[in-house]
Image 1 (tube, rainbow, N blue to C red):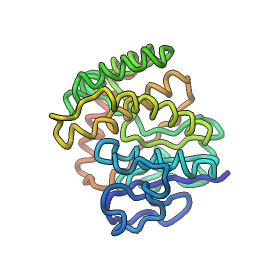
Image 2 (cartoon, rainbow, N blue to C red):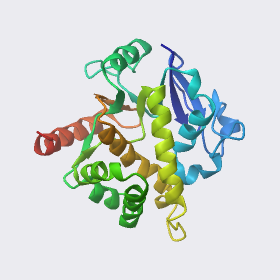
Image 3 (cartoon, rainbow, N blue to C red):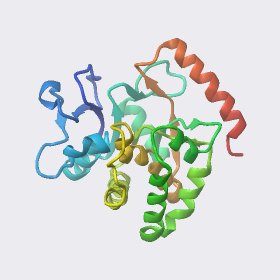
Image 4 (cartoon, rainbow, N blue to C red):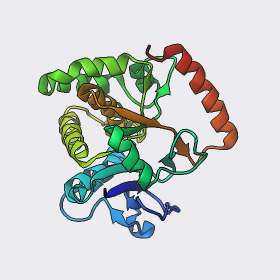
Length: 255
């Protein structure tokens, strides 16, 4: 099986130099970064929308330009990676484990994050606006009505996978990308960003973090959840986060 995990970076950073990892640059500093791929190569790209779409400009480029070259496709960040397993220390997910997991599961996602409030409420408490969610719900109801139950289920839960990180088969990647960017194309024409802060204007990247959960729920995919390695967080902070996570998980995990 041919696998590639694209590591999205907007600045110069040491990227894993072993299979299946390759860097892809986004944002205005691509010439300085010198990544293996870049999200503005060729005519099929939305690189100019990076300030609103975040790492999705990389996903779009992969979908339109190179997805047919790989059996399994993943997306990571320069500071965030999948652990090889729940018991592997800080070893990164490797080629062998990808093949093993995807022989038994449909998709690899980060361990869900649990909140004391719902996913929808957390979106608004963070950097989103409630009207963003209303727009997306209306788009789904009108254009993908079979997904509305999954949308409501995900938004009313206390947990979701975040960061737009995944590894999945090419077939699913292409299907998911088409569904996602169709929805976001509608949303871009309906969400007025005039009075949004630069952080709030990253709205389409934030919405995609929720939408992958909706898509997976609707498709009934079998998910392999793996812990995330967050390189910018100290060991002490990781322990604190782990404790909070376990407390919330015991309280809200679906039976």
